[in-house]
Amino acid sequence: MLKKIVMGALCASSLLLAKDVNIAVVTHGADTDTFWSVVKNGVNNAKDDMGVNVNYRNPASGDLTEMARLIDSAIAKRPDGLVVSIPDANALGKSIQKAIKLGIPVITINSGAAYGKKIGSLMHVGQSEYDAGLQAGKRAKKAGAKSFICVNHEITNLSTEQRCQGFADALGVKNNMLDVGVDPTEIERKVKPKLKNVDAVLTVGPTSASPTIKAIEKARLGRHIYFATFDVSKDILYGIETGVIDFAIDQQQYLQGYMPIVVLTQMAKFGVLQSGDINSGPGYITKENISLVEKYAGKYR
Image 1 (tube, rainbow, N blue to C red):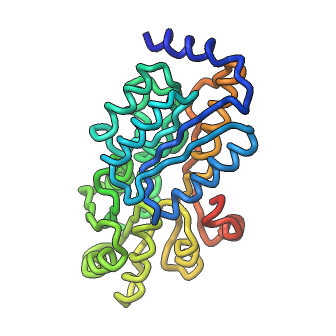
Image 2: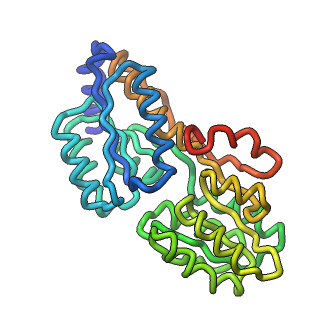
């Protein structure tokens, strides 16, 4: 059935001109999360490069009920493609399945790769979150870490849990996640007392990394806490430069915004679709290569 839907979409849309292509993008990133501003830059640049129409929407506070409503609103306009992140399949699955049943090609980005494949998405643009966490944990273990906390500001997002779990499995310990929310003051307050009991800290993104840097600096433990984080921001680069952060895992989120627009445009215009997912990460940013990404942090990296 899925094959018939996809082929039907290809045949129906193969004669579209770029100016007639309409693509909807709905992500879960809150307005305050700098990670998603880079994704949006990728979307906007691809829109201009491809000459297509793209409508980017996100729930201002990251609320998933609102995100489901935005997806429903987007598919009601019957776009030629839908790009969507899936942090929680229970909250968003019904809306995304509706799009697929209507024959709208769907590409998942950032989170929800496995669920997307299960319900019939075309591909995923992102990274294997578990494997990225596992490799980060192996680096920490090699450096001598035996215990850790994972500072998780998106506790309901399966992808962030997978990051933490991979790190835990590499160390051979229980997944020790700390639910901190998104308020910087609260994150710092919750993290600081936990530092004296662990060798390492993993943060799942800039929102949790920035307050954790402050917590570590203020704790003055007299020893180095091995600190790894996901994603890139100016604060994270500062942490790497000053030696507070050992490395950052870069999933190149700019590509998560850019590449789906390119793929869906080519599919709508010519009926071509590449085989397989697009792996945007992981890469690693350390003191040795930080100069390569500093210039573009917060915009393209």
